[in-house]
Image 1: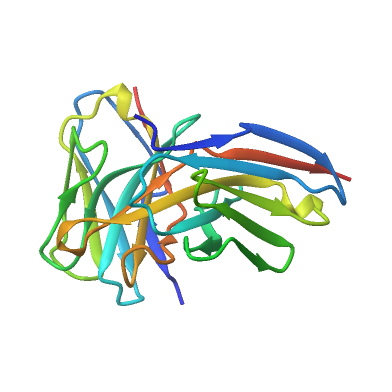
Image 2: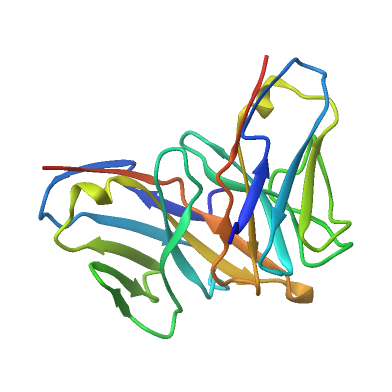
Length: 115
Length: 112
């Protein structure tokens, strides 16, 4: 049972383009939506995160758009650069009894930005 | 400032062998996690801990055990390795739940 569905699986854009990665979730208890960036041979690193009380968040060239009613969120990378080539994971987190954390990851999108 | 350190970085095991993966964090984080990463599957939570002396099962706990005897360390054990456990394992830690988790660089494990 995949709780966070991510698409596309891979994406190739030219330098300066705006790649868009989409995620959809089912569990309405999710209240934390981070995006992680992973370079080959490295662990994932937090890129940007959003809470469901806002519809958009920007950090530099990275923007998250959030649609609570549709249960969807997406990552846009403005003016993409070859250095942005990496695998991007969306995730969704929800609290559980006892204050435990549960974060579910999407399956990842491999982005290649060609010069 | 080391962050999250995993040991070893690579390992090849024969089916049935046992091993322990060590994760150490120097950020005084309460929460620690073990994930496995497989192609097309994303990151799946194996076990996690909300503090020293506590552990809990994640999505895919079968075949693994964990211990958190010290706050800074989280050990993942495989008692009898199987080829299905071939994967890249990541440890992570966070100060609070559902905020930024810091990941280690991973352990690539191959079971033959």
